[in-house]
View 1 (cartoon, rainbow, N blue to C red):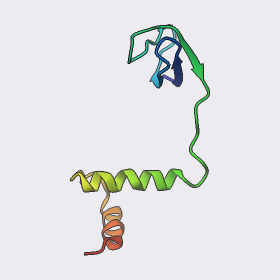
View 2 (cartoon, helix red, strand yellow):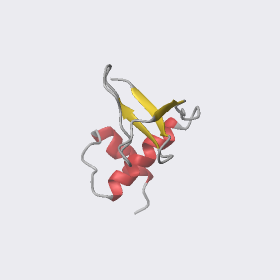
View 3 (spheres, one colour):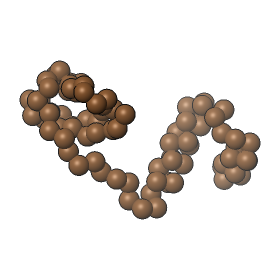
Length: 82
């Protein structure tokens, strides 16, 4: 299923949806089907890794550290000040 960005013409909300072929997406805010497909933004080159690491740090702060491999844990713990 491809991921598409939409703009709702009824409530002016912007959102993205996974859409199967043959289905009509609806706005999650107002339920309208009056939607325009918009151009998806891409992450700037070199920022994707920084974004991923920021999300992992947030998961660590929330106590969800178990999804890291042992080598990733060691690398992240090495960077923390104790």
